[in-house]
Image 1: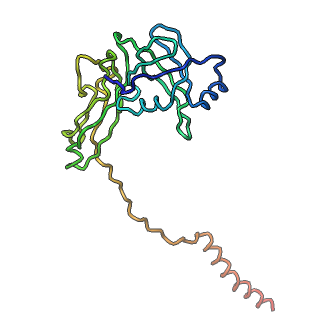
Image 2 (image 1 turned 90 degrees about the horizontal axis):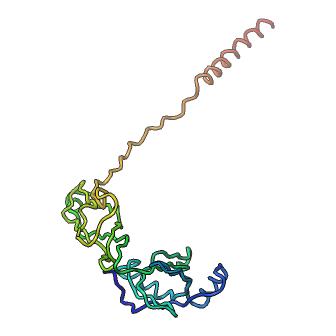
Image 3 (image 1 turned 180 degrees about the vertical axis):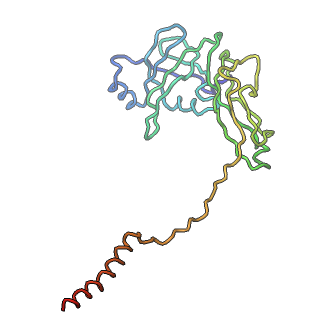
Amino acid sequence: MATSTIEAVVATPREGKFNKNAARRVRVAGKIPAVVYGAGQDAVAVAVDPKVITKILHSDSGHNTIFDLNVEGSAVVKAMIVDWQHEPIKGHLLHIDLKRIAMDKMMTVSVPIQLVGVPAGVKSQGGILEHVMREVEVECLPNDIPSHLDVDVSGLELHGVIHVSDLPHSGSIKFLGDEHATVAHVTAIKEEVVAADAIVAAPVEPEVAKKGKTDAAAAAPAADAKDAKKK
């Protein structure tokens, strides 16, 4: 199960208008605005500690972490982070969405795929490993959510492929989507073809220009001959 070492995330309900100015005041106070929804209950606007949320997102289970959520004035529930926004320049958290989790109901999550080992096709056959699919969508109960899926690629030879169907399967999780989709493969290194240096010939003066010069040179003596006869 994707659990967290954090005992609980404490959230303070927000009151009043929910606009940009209100959200800015929450951040100035050292918190970040958030919304809690799900489990058939009304959505609640709250403020939470960004350090606690960052710790969860950077944990091994990341956004799939299930934790206790304590909204002041309400009962403690299980929850997950389902969406978050970062400030594009400094990377500070701007807003998060939290979802209440019913532990007895199936849910859909994306689980990271980790490749283990160095493929034989890379070691001895000069290939390169391409990790095509980094997350896979699964359906399972909250207690069965894996923090990640390890895939051993050490036996993968040149042009070998790992598909979704090759991922570790169990009766507790169901893979969604195309099981023939490529997770990783070993491909040949594309050799760059270096073309031979082209021989650049010296520019040749156009024939028309040559002809013009020849005609002019021939015309000059003829003109001088005519002038001599006149004299």
